[in-house]
Length: 304
Image (cartoon, rainbow, N blue to C red; front, top):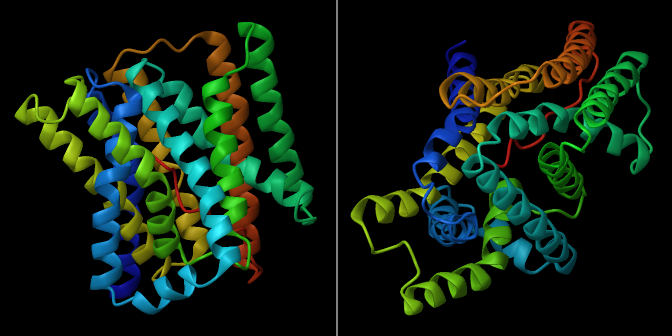
């Protein structure tokens, strides 16, 4: 029970940090999203490397570096993850936190759909109903608002495909894989930071506050991932699957209640469809779990 309770708190910490992360990125409003993302990559690499060394996982890292297929998957995943980070940071700075939260509500259901289309997985009727309801919610908002909720769809789509890549049997373990993904993006990110500094346009070094916040992007990135890894080792995946909705819920509350983002009636209806879909999907997974069946494991969590 002690281990189970500890695992629950690790899970709450992981998804709690992801949920309130927009408040951190809001502090960097004066820094362009591209520069924020570059610093996130630059500062994440040494932290992830330290985590690998402290956890004594050098053998796994060497195995990844020796496997060409693992490296190819890592490179492709790096592109998706970096794009996800960039769009999320831009959405926060642009006052679109609510729209970003919708992406992370949709993400688990889009992952289910990809599992059917790409991996030929078979769905239970409740899961099919959940996917249809979520699609109906997005379609409703698209028709009523006159445009696709592209921020939501890019965040959900990029992370769902990222999760699909990580599901490949040749993919590296999560921690080592994330280190590899950040390392792939490091040359471009570091190059951008150096060029901006040389031109005098960079935010790092201009003020102590922004410099400390940019350096802290590595902590904000790595800490919840380590908590997530500790959680999945101690509690059932069905429990972690329920906890994952804590993050977009907190993001939605932050956007609407704290930062005053408007939620129109049409958006509320679209969200209602998605929330109903998640309720159906979650209830079905809990029912299967009680019967001793397998539930769909969650992804690695929002890539915020």
